[in-house]
Length: 234
Length: 234
Image (cartoon, rainbow over all chains, first blue to last red):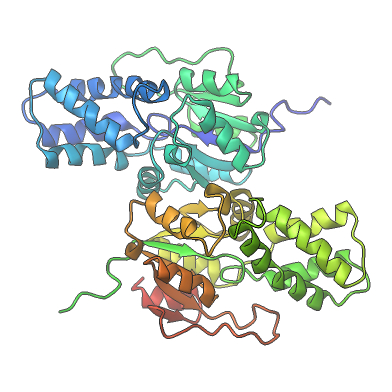
């Protein structure tokens, strides 16, 4: 009998925003309560669209390292300008903090607990340790380890994050599987030798169309974390 | 009404070896099974006595940074020589690995769970993230965060460990309470502004006398983690 091809995987590294949590619901509610007279759903999507580009500017060296909250504050003010509104410091702080209180997808907490019995389950996110810990406590995510970007001073898709987590667990990259609802995250992980699992999150953008369907290059494709647990033999 | 003096504490940082785990029982059993013809209890105590001094040599700059397992391998061979025995690589690896499988004190896992409802509960240990994660999974320690020495490249009682953990949680040192069965650890933590709680572990050295009783300088003195939870209002 040939061994199960994923037998060597010991560590599961989870993306958080969108993969285990529903940022659209949490942030659009906060925007609706804080920013008058804007389309909260569109404001939220526009803010999220500015997320990856500003992280890329940090990784390119154009901007110095700053924690995610500071970058989100900057993009929030850009979005507010775009919508022709002005946010005071208190509203801005409330909205940036809302990324710590976004709800988990219903399958996330039970799926993580199920996978934890067989694997080391970690967050590997561009959020900071403080942000991710608050998110985990609110949602009952029983992470074995919280891999925040501030541990490495780098943002995904930088090599330092994926390989940094593997090194902490004395693991070859092939012993670590990245789990995400975003193909770009998985493509980067795979380029550094990690295994990859795509998770469908069709409602990530609040029902608006998006083009993250997962490629055939991934080791696994799961409909949610329950399905992932089943496919990983848990 | 004056506020409860510890109201500001948000994060509890736990020492692990001796404070939440019973290294004597785990290691002496491993020594008994691996090293013939020695007094396993005395061999174990002698190995543990060599722990703090070699970490201090790293922090003084005399030795380069190496992870705890490598330092324990070195002190193990010293102890074996002291007892006139020779250990092969397999026995040595078995014994060093045994520090990952030592049992928790019976009150530890339930106490951590009780404290977790009100506080951010973290390991802050000289073990590595990999070691501490294996220890936690085996014992059901539901840490919110695993603060291994490899995150900072420093060993307690170095400032970088205590203040590094506080910084990850965006906390002033006074918002963090170090919990340990060792006064030296608490004295260092207090010198950097942390609060301190001493936990009695009279059996830490396997019933042999030791002199760690806790000083009057600590903010709290608890008989175990249940008692600590009670004293912290959990």
